[in-house]
Length: 242
Image (cartoon, rainbow, N blue to C red; front, side, top):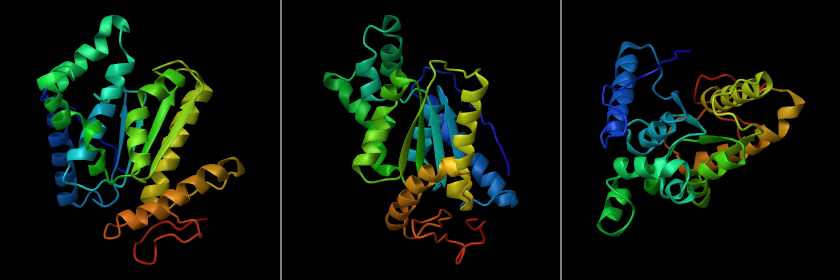
């Protein structure tokens, strides 16, 4: 496994911020794939806090078909986050979104939101997405990409962590968060399922998503496990379901 943390030289709170990140991600993928360091059909991407916005931008604009993605408690520069945070923190999120999306979502500025906000381009997403909320307010803040993918029948999972922390410090919650991400990535990129009885419901839900993904992306390599117990290792060299 190769883990890469990428950063862009463009400052935050500018309209070019997310596009710069996508350029960086794609350049890194190309470089590592050309070197033979990675398999470009087995790439996952993780976002937390502000980098959730970058992940959604990557999923809606990248020329690469990523195999899995996960975002936790973060910014998405979407309309629903703008609306639900009115009067919160002196409208800090709303003012930030207005910079990223070309102004407030009214009148002539609305076209900028349609062009720039990744949540208005969820029809472009072909990657299974895990969305993790840290407490109920966080879930509500992350609801827009979840709902839009659900309406389209695309693989998306919403998980609620019982915490109000943003940067997780409580050991049990932090372990649960990390385990969820690892399970999600291994399921979609390796066809692996943890056989712990407590995770049976989780994998049953994900197997149904795998069925849906196999219909949505018939031409793309898949490594997940279907509801009938079949993985995709007949055509791909992957870790089989235990």
